Structures are given as structure tokens and as C-alpha cells.
Image 1 (cartoon, rainbow, N blue to C red):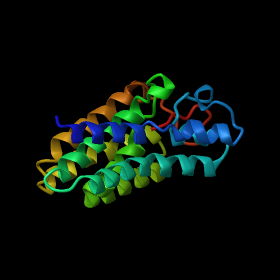
Image 2 (image 1 turned 60 degrees about the vertical axis):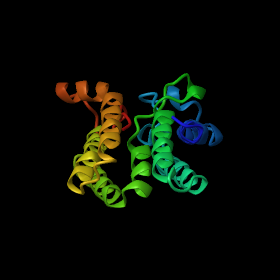
Image 3 (image 1 turned 30 degrees about the vertical axis):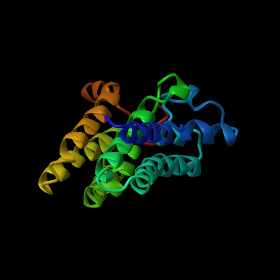
Image 4 (image 1 turned 90 degrees about the vertical axis):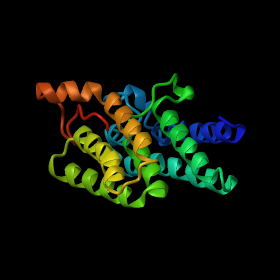
Length: 204
């Protein structure tokens, strides 16, 4: 790993580790999001503060922080480091969101940030991801199901599009999102996973 790759990884981590759900709820006077609902810093739990605008802002910013990290790495490093740098930045952003040092490595579940990774790297996969996520949110209304299904679609899209260099990384990211949803999976198996709008709704 070169110095440039390390820099891109650290850059991505710093962007990804910004806990917008935590920051926005504090600034809005809603208290510590970690003490509300599921305790997660993601948009669905932010929605439990009663503010749709805060939840929407958290979702958008958690998504765009990954996009920004990748685009910045793309600008900083030209050929032949272009593709490697943006992928290290993507990895850093995902890890930073899931395990932010500022919150003792207890971060979000990665669905929004994963979308932000796809937007600059594989726009078609990002469109598929967003469509699946939105459709399931509107129909099934279980945030974890929508987030996990969308995450799984990313490596599938890469495979179908024959993006062989991106496929392993996206498969790994999907695995991380599923791992962060392990408690949700257990609740789904028991039939106790709440739907969006219920008082115990958990975030994807």
C-alpha cells in the first residue's frame, strides 16, 4: 500500500466517521440520539425524535459524505492512482461510518453511506439500490429489510454489469451492512422487527 492509498483511506475514514445523526440531533436540541429508540445514529432512529427534516438531513448527509470523499480522492490523485485511490476512499468512508472513533466505534448500519459510495463509482447500481430501498420502504415499511435488500443489490448489479474489479469490494460492503443488521435479522426471524413509525422502530 502506497502513501497515496493510505492517505485516501484516512481521508475516507475522516469523512465517513462524521456522525451526522448525532450532531444534528444535538444541534436541534433533541438530546443524545444514542439514548433514543434503538440508540443507533442512523436516519430511521433520528426519525424517532419526531423530526422528519432531521431524519432526511441525516440520510442525505450520511450518503453524500461517502460521495464527497471519493470525489475528492479522484481529484487529488490522477492516473495511474485514480481508481485505487477512490476505492480506498470508499472503504475508508464505509468503515468510518460503521466504526467512528469519535463515538467509541459505535456507528450506523451503513445503508445510506453505501449508496453514497455507489453514486460516483457505479451510478447504475446506485439507481437500482435507491429504487429497491425506496420501494421496500414504501411497501414493506421495515427499514432493516429495505436497507439489507438494497445493500445486497450492489454486488449483484456489479456482477451483472461485469464490473469485476468492483465486485469484491461491493460484496464486502454488503457483508458489513448485513453484519451490522444482525440483531434486526434475529428480530425478523422471530417476527418482532418493527415497522417504520412504530415506537420501537430500529434503523437501517
